[in-house]
Image 1 (cartoon, rainbow, N blue to C red):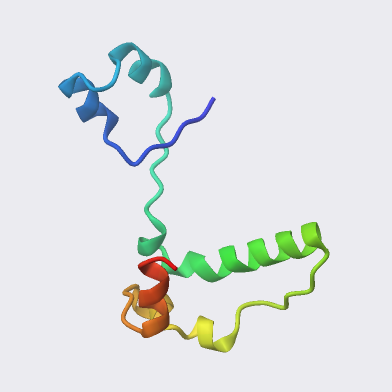
Image 2 (cartoon, rainbow, N blue to C red):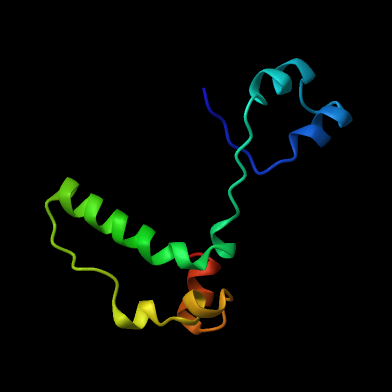
Length: 92
C-alpha cells in the first residue's frame, strides 16, 4: 500500500490530529520527492511523457512542446513572471 501527503504526519500525531497507530503502520518506508517547482529540469521530460501517453491513448499526433512554451520564464527561472505563466499559476 502507498500513500502520499503534503502534511507533516509526525507533527499531526503529536497534535492528536492523526492516529499514531496508523502513522506507524504507514511509515515503513519514506520516499521524499521535492515539489516540481524545485525540479524544473523534470518538467519537459514529464511533458513529453504525457504527450506520448495521451497521443497513444486518444490516437492524436501532438508533436511536442512549442518553442515558446519551452523558453517560457517559468521553465528557466522557476517563477511565474511572464503573463502566460502568471495566468496558468493563478488558474483559468
